[in-house]
Length: 289
Image (cartoon, rainbow, N blue to C red; front, side, top):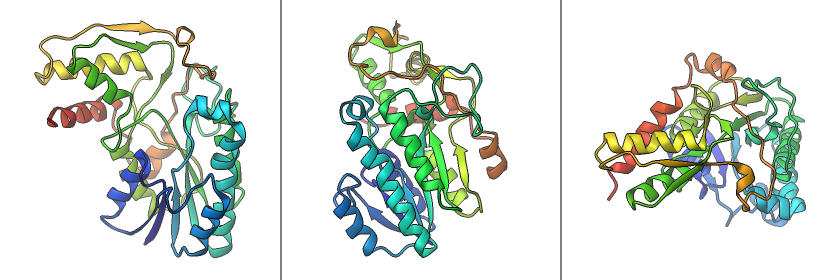
C-alpha cells in the first residue's frame, strides 16, 4: 500500500513513517514539502501525490500558539485537513486524520467515549474539532483521537522529567489534570492494524489503565528510574495546579481520559496499560548515554 504521511519530522509522523515502512511504501510529506499553513504548498504537494491512503498527524498543537493566532490554528488544523479530505474524496483515497482529547470540555467524571459530545474550551480544541468535521464530511475517513503522546522521536514531558531527575533538579508537575497517555510505538502499531480494516468515523486511541495526572506520570517515571538504578533514591515531585502556572494562558480541560472499547474491538485485544508503555520508555531512555 502507498501511504502518504504529513508531518514526518514531528513525533507522531516520524513514528508512523518508521513503523509502517516495514509493510508499506511510505511517501513522506514533511513541512518542507507540505506546509499546512501555506495553501500553495499544500496544493502543490497534493497535485503531485499518488497514494492509497493519506495519514494526517500534522498540526499546530501548542495551546498558547493557537490562542494567540486562532486564524492560523483554523487554517492548519481545520481548513487544510478539509482540503486534504476533498482532494482524497475525488480520487478514492482514504484519509486517517489524527485529533486530540482536547476536543472535550473536561467536565466529565468518567472516560469519554466516541459518542460523548465534544465541547472544546480553547482555540486549539475548537480548531481540531473543526478539522474532524471537515474530514468526516467525506464517507470512509477515520479520525483517531490521541492524548499526551510520548516516544523516542522527540522529547516530551516524560523526557523532561527523566532529564531533570538525572540532573538532580527539583521536580514538579501538574496534579489537577487527568487523562490517559499514548506512546508512539503503540500508536504506530495500532495504525498499521487499522490500515487493514474497514473502519471509519471517530476512534479513541490511548493506553488502558486508570486516568493519571502529569504528577502521577512523573512519580511513576522516577520510581522506575530508581528500580533501574539510574537514581539512587526516589526524589519527591512537588504538586502543581494549572491555575498556579502563568505560562498556561489558554484554558485546559481537567479530565479528558478516553474510553478505548472501540479500539479494543477493532484490534481484538485491549491496548496495554499506560504503566507498561511508560516503563518500557523509561527503560529505553536508561540505555541512552
